[in-house]
Length: 89
Image (cartoon, rainbow, N blue to C red; front, side, top):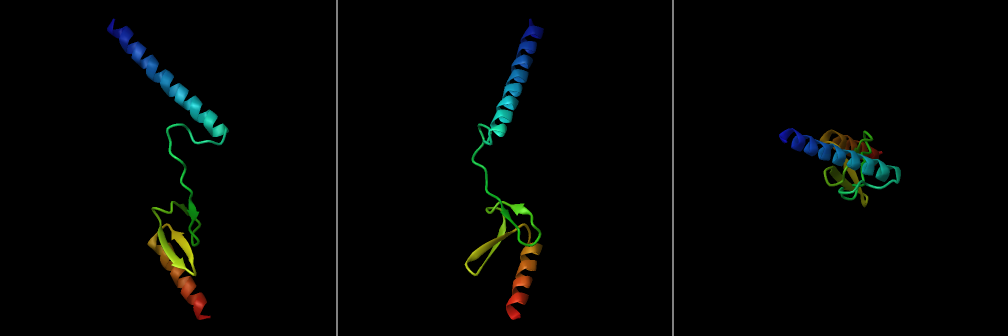
């Protein structure tokens, strides 16, 4: 009896995982986010190295009314050096 109960639980878990996978594949083919996931985050590109970062987690600098987002201090510092050198010329 215990063996049957464990097999039934295992079957239910495997079936649920299978249908979640099928739902995700169908949603992906339709260009939608799978159910249960929030709206996707729009990523911005780091102007120095080209890495895409989430604006909330990125470092930023505002210059000339435009905000630029960076993946690291190194990229932010390199951009600051480039813009300072460009403004001197």
